[in-house]
Image (cartoon, rainbow, N blue to C red; front, side, top):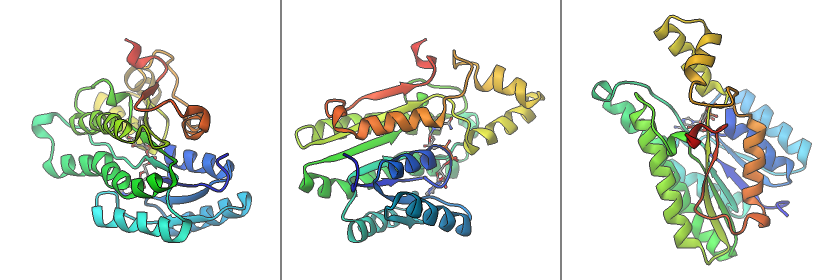
Length: 260
Ligand code: NAD
């Protein structure tokens, strides 16, 4: 039932976004890939997905901190792929610092990429979804959209904001065949977390295995990273017609972290 629809996944050149993009490609959706990275690698991946799945794969290098680039990406998806049926907001960055030492430019960047970009993509994509009377918006928030951790003020504020945006949009579009939900993962082993492991190992003077067990996964009761394939499965469910009544939810997939 997703065959032939167009899915745009922001931040899909790496990690969770790349996984979700491949999952929608596997379900027969045309896809719009976005994010930074090595140009050659991105083009190779684009061609591979296109050939493997017999779908159209567009790539947009739009910078999610720039509203005018986001608008251009949405227009490109409309003119070259008939509009966005499934929008997954996944682009994100992290910065860790005590709040009174938090560099203002880092604060602005985290809020712009992790929160405001979702406002601009939703604002751009909704009119076409309303016209088609069908749409799915999936915001990749975080367990940090539900609970806080120290030294992540901008990230926690952005992710809580994303959950609030999700609920508001869900109420506005509830009667129009569109749903808007947030996925709130615990720790997933991606480049974003690999960087934190290295930083924490230096800061705590620990080896990386100890950091993973005692620092990174300290609040994740399963003591296991969430698998990208588990997030893919949830995203596919939310995009399906069987999930038509799941709207405005913030779905934790965190091994029990936020059950505490
Ligand atoms: P990642 O670093 O592997 O991927 C981030 C993606 O965002 C990349 O494709 C990158 O190019 C893109 N990106 C960054 N800045 C951008 C910009 N200005 N414009 C366009 N694209 C940009 O990270 P990830 O772990 O896969 O994280 C993806 C999302 O999942 C983020 O929103 C993150 O907050 C969220 N998340 C991650 C975890 C985790 O443990 N990894 C947990 C919860 C939530």
